[in-house]
Each structure stands twice: as C-alpha cells, then as structure tokens.
Length: 341
Ligand code: EPU
Image (cartoon, rainbow, N blue to C red):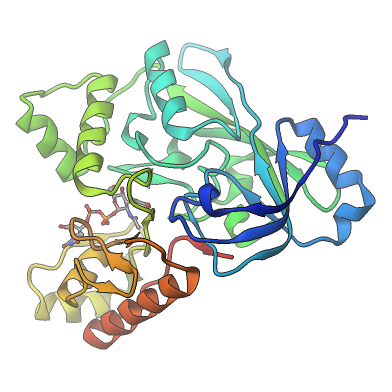
C-alpha cells in the first residue's frame, strides 16, 4: 500500500490562490502520485471530511476558511505516449504548469497548443473549465484523461465525449469534487496549420510582418498580446477573466445591436449569439474603477484585480455591483467564471 504524505495542519492558502485572498485550510495534503490518491480515497477518515482540490489556484475565489482537507495535486511528468502519421499523443501529469508544458511541446517540435500559451494554472485544471483563448479551445486538442473518483478511489479514463466539454465547461465543472484528474493526454497534429481566426492575433502577426507563422511565432504573439492586456498574477492578484461571455438568443441580440451598433458579438453554431462581457462592463462604466480593495482592470474590463488586502467578500461585492449594473443597462446577466469556495 502506498504511504500517504503527512498533512499540514491549519495551512495558509493565501499563496496558493492567484487572487491572493486570505484563507486557511484545516488540513493541506500535497499529492505527488495517482497511487497516493487511491490510498487516500481508501482511508476511512477521508470519507467524512469536506475536501477541495487545488491545482494552480488560478480560478478560485476563497470567501472564508476551509474546514476540511485541501488536496494540492502535484503529479508531475510529461512524455510522448504514441505517434502515427497523423498525430503525436502527448501526456502530462496534472500538476505540471500549463504554460511550461505548452512551451515544452513546442520545443519538442509538436505543435497545436500554441494559442493557449501563458494561460495560468496546471495541466490538470485545463480540462475542468476547458480553457480557451485566441481562437482555440483545449477540447480541440484533447485525447483523454485519467481521473480518480474521490469517494471510491476508482481509477477511470475519460474520453472527450465523457468529459462533455462546452464553453468554459465540462462534466468536472458540473460535478465539483467528484473526480480528481491525475494526467491528461493531447492529440497534437502532424499536419499543422496555424489557427488565426482570432482577429487580434492575426493583427499582431501582421504588425510583426509575419504572414505564415511557425508554431513558436504564434506562441510568442499570443504571449505578447496577453502581457499587454492581462495582469501578471505574480505582480497583481487576479483570476483571469472574471466573467464568462454571456450567450443570448437572436431576439435579445437584435434588440441590443440596434441600440448599440458597435457592440461586438459572435454568432454560435446553434443560432445563439455570444456577447463580450468585457465590452458590456466597460460600457457600464466599470473599467478601471475600484470598489474597496478590488478593481476592474484598466486594460481589460473582464478581469478583476486585488489592489492589496482584498478578501473574498470584497470580490463578491464588486462582482455583484458589476452584474447589477450590466443587467440594468443591457438586460443581460453575466456569470462569474471562477469557482467560489
Ligand atoms: N472589450 C471591450 N472592453 C474591455 C475588454 C474587451 O470593449 O475592457 C471588447 C474587445 O474590444 C473585443 C471584445 O470585447 O471586441 C472581446 O474582448 P477580448 O478579445 O479581449 O476577449 P474576451 O472576450 O474579453 C476571451 C476569454 C479570455 C481569452 C480571450 C482571448 C472568456 C471569458 N474570456 O476574453 O480568456 O484570453 O477571449 O481569446 O471567454 C480567461 O478565461 O481567463 C481568459 C483570459
């Protein structure tokens, strides 16, 4: 039987969430292998305690202390699992840093993840909310993943269909705490073509005089855009996009587009229309404004930032104020992207 690591009692979670919110956990357990996880699930005291799984802590808002066990996943490792004439299948442990993994695949000559460069967090967190940026969603490169059911310790492989990916959504997001992801496999295409459907990315490359970019050049362009627009969590606490872009029906879109000719909108395959929450928030006058110690970021209204000393309650307060203002102005509800704990 695999030995379990010793838990840390009364652990400080402040450095473990990118928003820098103060919180403590009754117990913190750092797991470095899937075997440890199965051993943990089999232990009797485990069954009773409330628990929370932590990856990179980049999509979490702590609103208080956690009276249970926090599991920090640090399962490492990355390798080429298989290849054929179409794809490389590459696997990474859930605890690997996402961006380091992306850059490593590019250095090996395996393209496909470059549009997702510089997204904070871990490999294991990527499928939970199906991370996406600059014209690509992780689901488009996903092969399968390994997870452990926390209640039983049973190991299970999830295919893409099992994961039921949606926009910033998956079966894991809809069943919080049920499974813990231990490793993820990606399908990286040998016949690679750059994904440049995102206008801002195309403009960035054009400005650099690059017409047919290499995967590495695309990655560098994404990094340049992100550095310009998004705050670095190492310098200023934040959780990336704080709100999801709302999806509305055709009638709502038509009403808003008539009143606001410049409003960005993205028609979806199912006939609905996605709106830009950042635009709605900016129009509602919130961009660059603070409420207490939390601010609406001056360069990207979709991001809330910790100006120093913020608590989860402060985050809730400004989020509710922004939601109310957008609803009053546009009749559209916007929902937070991070998970509140
Ligand atoms: N906009 C404004 N004001 C703002 C921000 C945006 O008017 O303050 C407008 C922009 O001009 C643009 C539109 O809104 O016309 C969309 O903005 P942008 O291209 O910056 O992308 P986004 O919709 O704000 C999404 C993702 C980001 C991802 C970018 C790039 C969500 C919730 N956010 O942001 O993801 O990096 O596209 O693909 O889908 C994240 O999820 O944490 C994240 C950063």
